[in-house]
Image 1 (cartoon, rainbow, N blue to C red):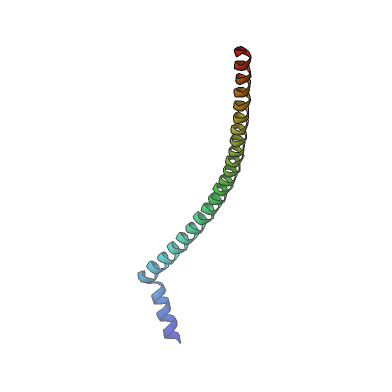
Image 2 (cartoon, rainbow, N blue to C red):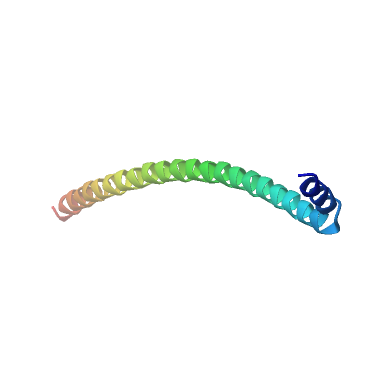
Length: 93
């Protein structure tokens, strides 16, 4: 058992172990960074979705308003044409 402990200490002191340890810590840092970026991306995505929903609602409201204005315009056109017809009839008399 003493030889296993001595071997372990010798391995831990070696440059191979230090290199492996540095790689593990670097991997941990990269994982933390990736998780942080993922969280930021998810937050940004949620914000963009909210903006999209708001834009969609506004677009729908504008579309309804446009349809209403087009209908009113059509009604006004009919009334103006009727008035012009009445004016022509009066002038022809």
